[in-house]
Amino acid sequence: MTKVLVAYYSRLGTTEELARQLAARLGAEIDTIRLPSPVYAGLAGFWRGIWHALRHHLPDIACERDPVGYAFLVVGSPVWAGRLSAPVRAYLARFADHIGPIAAFWVSGSGRAYPGLALEIEELTDRVPLTTSSFGRREVLEGTAGDKLDVLARDIRAHF
Ligand SMILES: Cc1cc2nc3c(=O)[nH]c(=O)nc-3n(C[C@H](O)[C@H](O)[C@H](O)COP(=O)(O)O)c2cc1C
Image 1 (cartoon, rainbow, N blue to C red):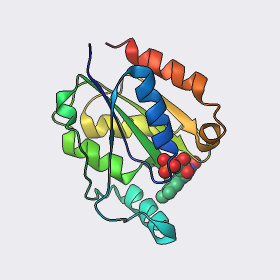
Image 2: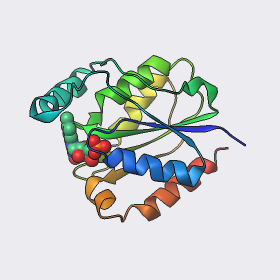
Image 3: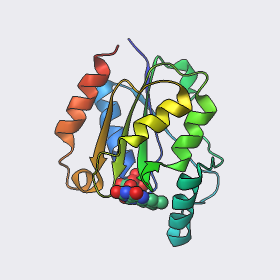
């Protein structure tokens, strides 16, 4: 069976909720991208998050699993300032040279598509994500993201 890893960062829990639901659909293992210090907590952290996303800053991150040991990586990120969140950028930058096929999803407050995040992932990893999906925070909180998650899981499975 193909070993799949769903790795995500979540500041407020929305991306985490989707990552858990997706991992359950895929029978995948899951890993949280963590920050050794709470750099993005509170209002100051919010503004720092915007600044870091715009500046492509790579914060210190920690994770438990090595994505190198997996045949397929799915990354989940909140949208920050229309871009990848800084912790997910740092994760992809760290492992870019060692990962295989990749898929991604992202969650925003507005629910817009934000296709630029797929390009960011491609630039960082030199790989075109095989499939991507964008979600809005509201559909996650209201529990109406299930159909889109089913489609994403099916599209990911079609690649292994
Ligand atoms: C630093 C920061 C920047 C954000 N920028 C955007 C944005 O450009 N567009 C948008 O629709 N939502 C934006 N949001 C809202 C988040 O994308 C949204 O709340 C998301 O669901 C948060 O995911 P999380 O709960 O996993 O942290 C931003 C949130 C933060 C903290």
